[in-house]
Length: 539
Image (cartoon, rainbow, N blue to C red; front, side, top):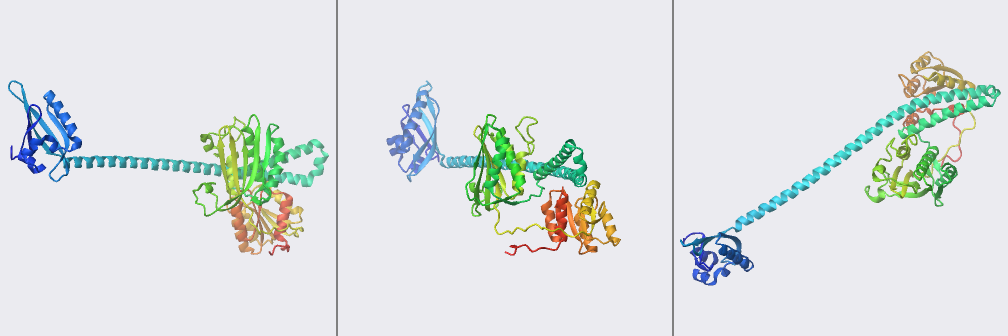
């Protein structure tokens, strides 16, 4: 036991150290005699001596097994961890004689345990971080999938709305064409029928015009409508609307215009912008059942390309850097909670009672702003009101404006190609009224057959969408046979901007349905007549 490699020790019945083997001298660098004389305090680090003695006395008093981990100071002065264990030694009579125990160096084991604990903690932290990362990625994927489904839904609705609008526009154009012919050739007969006949006639025209307006609204929603952008004075526009809205919104609603002097002009389709602002004002009125204030405002806004795309200053949707006019419609109404606000611009979403709203107002405003080269944003706080803001581009400088032609072209020989019989008759009658000799064809095949037959024509007037070959392809095929043939393309679709680029490259004119006899005559005149000199265009 004296030569054992383990620290072995003994105490008397009072706990006093009475024996320590030679291993103590090797570990602590002191003789056994010195160790026994000084007791435990010569080897245990000061910070742990009191706890060690208290634990040993507690075991001694109960004659229980003793076990404790304690720091000791070795021969080099380094701190080491020992596990000290001892068992009571009893006489046959049951009297306590003392304790026999041993110390085991567990410093390395504790270091390994600490390393394992740190590894486990690090692993748990890494697992938590990775789990959070995976959860965030899953949430981002789910959000992206929701956005994709929303975009696909909007695209499907847009395609449906665009298709319905195109067909409806063609039907309305045909009705308006018939009404125009009746008015042009038989107005005297209608007038002779008395006020009732004229009221009925005017009612038919108003109904057809409303149909055209509805189809164009649908095309704006589908972002397929041609917008006739022009320079608009924002102050004049809003002040003109104030007179309209003051009566339309009712006496309980106060209309305020907030426009500083000297604002530059904006570029937008006036009719569509007025319709959009009126719809927004009506929404504002409906959000104030007990009355309130609707504010229409305008201000200049500059989007700096130096601003980061994700900054607060660039938070205006997907606006490109540049100069914009910011228009807004604000109310003091009930406002919207975050859930309603998140869906406010969705097509067909509405919080109004049944039969009180279509749910298309804000989505159409968003479509109009985007198609105009701008953006829309909605801000709302419950019980504080809502503000809908439109950014529309500022008019670029230096663009000349041509004057309309005053003289119409001389008549000639025209070929009209249109698959709708009523619309075809209308076009033929309009051209004949202007002195043209007109031949007609129901599709591109019949038109090309007439050209192949060698019949002379000065003008080709064709619809865009027809069974088989469309109007643009017909013009290209006709130009192969007659390179100098003037061509005018009519379209009822909303994709005029794309077709206009084709018309510019192909050298033909473009006219949107529905078309009045005067509009048709002026378009043909502008196409056939030699170019006139317009003063001021050479700048």
